[in-house]
Image (cartoon, rainbow, N blue to C red; front, side):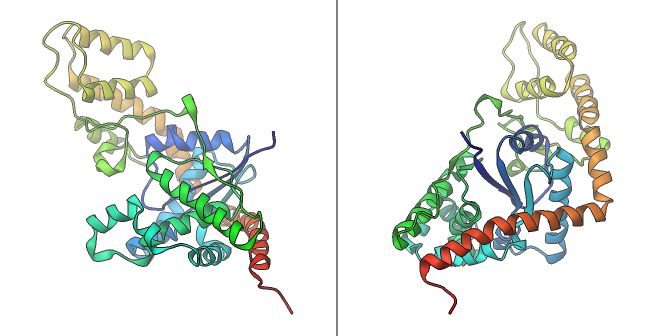
Length: 333
């Protein structure tokens, strides 16, 4: 079987955290050597929230730096900035001509945004799935790494691609499907007693790759626990189990076993537990922080990466747009 074409993007709205690092991004690093991968920074998508121009540029730069520090190789994959490709807004416009109000208004994410931000229900929010579809099918992707919350958007990408094919009686776009990580996907727990590490629960729920040692210690000191076990062999509460799971990812097995035994015999001291976990997190992330600092200081490298990614991505996107324009009837005299 030939290599799959895989497309994935990230909105430049904040720093990568440990959950990203051990989860999706670690899989991207593997995928780039096994498939034809296009990874992009989705700066167009961020415009629905009207970011400050200076913040937007800095956020794009930071995401680029952190992706490179995590191991994405511009020679092994195509890493680019969404707004560098004029073909994306052109395909977005072409797909919009065959996207209908009713189907867009029924999208779960749009209904949620309309409920939570009634003063900013802009057209970009309504047509967000169309832009996402353009991002995917511009490279004729067959696989897309997405979470459950994005599966409806991926279904719509198939809908728009198939509709275009039928409308113009051409087989331009293949159907993209979700990329399944299977058992390889590591789920990193958060610090505030809930489920996975996610910024939707606030910055104190995550350990960012660029967090200083002092900040990591502060966040860990505030990590949610409970009143402690009162009987031997008590099952840990979800919040405490989260911390055990986190220790299992970054600490030695001996240390994890030590604290599990302390919990089982009711002698655990959460203060010591969290201090030890904080130091292990600091040591675990030190190489990533050092790479981020070095890459961030190398403007020449960043410019080269962006230009190379733009060149490769445009070469792919231009072929698709040429086929679309010819199918529609836009031809030179």
